[in-house]
Amino acid sequence: SQTIHQWPATLVQPVGSPLSLECTVEGTSNPNLYWYRQAAGRGLQLLFYSVGIGQISSEVPQNLSASRPQDRQFILSSKKLLLSDSGFYLCAWIGGGTEAFFGQGTRLTVV
Amino acid sequence: AQKITQTQPGMFVQEKEAVTLDCTYDTSDPSYGLFWYKQPSSGEMIFLIYQGSYDQQNATEGRYSLNFQKARKSANLVISASQLGDSAMYFCAMRELMYSGGGADGLTFGKGTHLIIQP
Image (tube, rainbow over all chains, first blue to last red; front, side, top):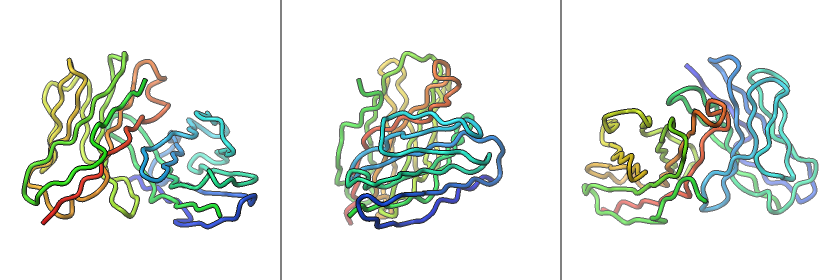
């Protein structure tokens, strides 16, 4: 069965520091992978998606970037965090039909 | 224009009562799927139910059912016999399949409804 691992679960980072969130998928190959962000009390905003290695589509201009170095690995990064980058970040694998699995999420607080 | 609209930011419901969470959507894509997720305070997204645009019958999963009214572009979630553990955020989401590269751009979410079940 498909599983998504996402880490870390929580992160407190100072403004201006770098960021690296990692997501790995098991039980499938060539998955479509997604990074969403959820601000406090809000819905999920799609940040990036990837349909294959090295293929990244950005939905919203950000202080963030994403990379897909391996088939089942999706990384969200920033060179210099802003206060507005605080939020809950979710990695997702979305396949055909009803297949949509989410990681446990990373709660990022930028201080 | 918003593609998914959830008009109830918060709801208080008495335990054991039925609950209807509203969701309307906007799309010109003839092929799409509608999802409902539950998000407890831990943050994980728990899949509840799915309705395809071509499905003739309303989807049901245990205590969850989806009241799908295609002409009205409505996909309300109904929870029967609510329980204290149902207290959470609930999100409606849509995946457009034909005009968006087979849905490669993922799910579009509403802003959610915060449901609180009272004893």
